Length: 314
Image (cartoon, rainbow, N blue to C red; front, side, top):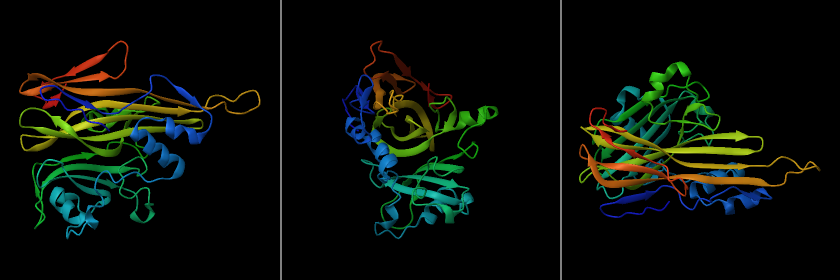
């Protein structure tokens, strides 16, 4: 990912170099070189080769000569849930913020002994049904125990065993920081992919960080991925989700068979990405944020403005 930062007007390029139209290749090994998004490349390699994704939430923190254990962190951020089964407890330094760390933790109802190597350290659809998602900010100078910088964000996942949210659960769905529509138009709680530490400057004093999440649908002829991002910031001593935006779409699909029963090729379509721009104008003390579809001829865009009552961009 590239970050383009300009003072006074900040543009954050969330995905890069997406082709303007679908492209056809003639074998699976030609797909990855033709994909321009690094997220797309990594996910395709995971699907095809079983490659593991980079450790994006810091679940390797516990192997870096620290005396801290995941259970210590759970006791700090959510002691009431210390007996839950945790499929992910990660801790990662917040770049540019001295002695400040982001924690992402996910619990699951699956028995620990049946979690395989792809499910451990994960907060995705591979660990179903997920139970809770916790995001927290800790201050830690390397000695003693970390301290909470704000009240953590805790979400109970309102979904069925497949990650789908019942239509009757509209109120619960509205509360989720990680809901989005998949390519079948179902609303799901997305699989968490990685922390995003682009320079999200909400005003002269407040910063935000992002968590990317996605819904992936697998089909006999290929797959479709929808990805969104939620920004979090400390507001009134609480860590809150303050903006959700779709950011990336990718698809690769095999065309129908020819007259000899052979596939002509695989169609790669990565033609939808979105750019968030922080505008110089402020609403209620927060910079307005502009969402634009990159490369769109009709230049559709949306302006998000800070709502003081809801403590959220709308």
